[in-house]
Length: 114
Length: 113
Image 1: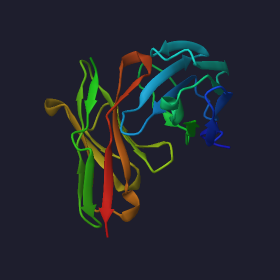
Image 2: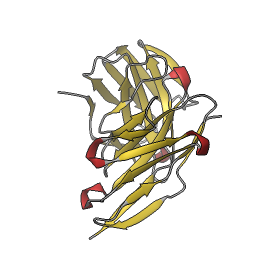
Image 3: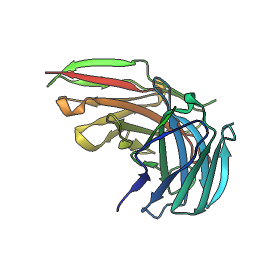
Image 4: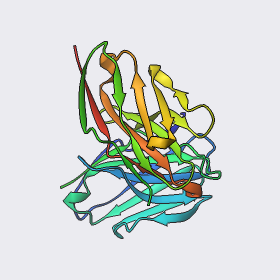
């Protein structure tokens, strides 16, 4: 595998379910990101991890819980979601150095909440 | 505050015609600028980036962009569009040392045969 991979690619869940999204980067980067992309809205940055520490949490509801066990893996744990949480969730990684980093994106997980 | 504006939500061009997608940014310091492309149901692919130096940047798939500081713009161009270029295009600015990217709302490109 190369680049940034995400699993699953598609997920349908009920409002009472608990599920997790997984992201893995094979680029040797030290920063990872979760974005939410809803129809007709700009990309929304949800979480940033740098050197496995969360450095940014953009007022995301607590029903979204990130986890970064090491620099190659990032999870987004989901519980008691709402239908408006249906979206494409994108993971990205970068080598964060003085703001010159380029982010590389995975293919995304298409989430549908029923 | 940093921001990125893509004035055109939707653009339609004929195959073989030239293309220019507009991007304006607001940022206090020297910006790091990016263009990404997203095909339906896919992630974002980097087309090109500007960090410093030559203000005309070449990217993949025959795209180029020009940084104009006086106009706070970073417009994307292609001399001859192919049907496979139909996608959504995002301009982004790197927000300082945080590693964050601020994205524009995107421009959807439709290519007519």
